[in-house]
Structures are given as C-alpha cells and as structure tokens.
Image 1: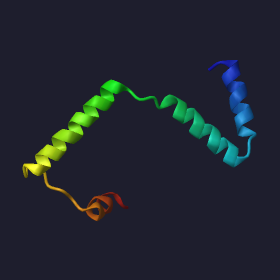
Image 2: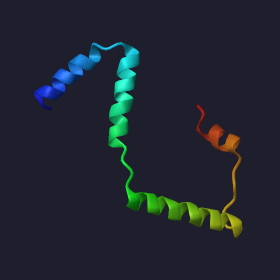
Image 3: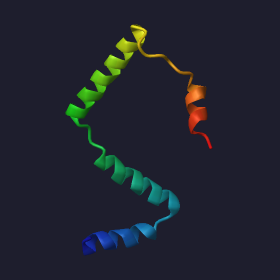
Image 4: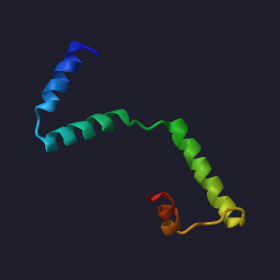
Length: 72
C-alpha cells in the first residue's frame, strides 16, 4: 500500500461516521463499472429463465419461502 493511501486512510478514519459512510459508498461506486459482456450474459440468462418458466420447466417460488430459507 502506498504512503498516499495510508495517509488517506488515516484522514478517512478521522471523519464523522456519516462522512466515512459517504466516502465508502463513493469509492465502491467508482469500482462498480458495468461490463457489457457480463450484462449481455445476465440478460440472456434472465430471458432463458423466463422462457423456461413459461414452458412450465421452471417453477416460481413465493418470496416469503425464499426469505424464510435464509433466515436464522
């Protein structure tokens, strides 16, 4: 890690919690760039799943059932 990054981390830690949260969100947003190839693959997957559902090959599940599966 560069000295510049270490200095920024020290400065960030001195910020108020709400400012640190805003900083983290902004940094994460800057890393979240769309990848057209991945977007195309996800769109194809979504279309394939909808088509399978319409053909009766894929069953829908209630949201409450899915959420209950992952609750402690």
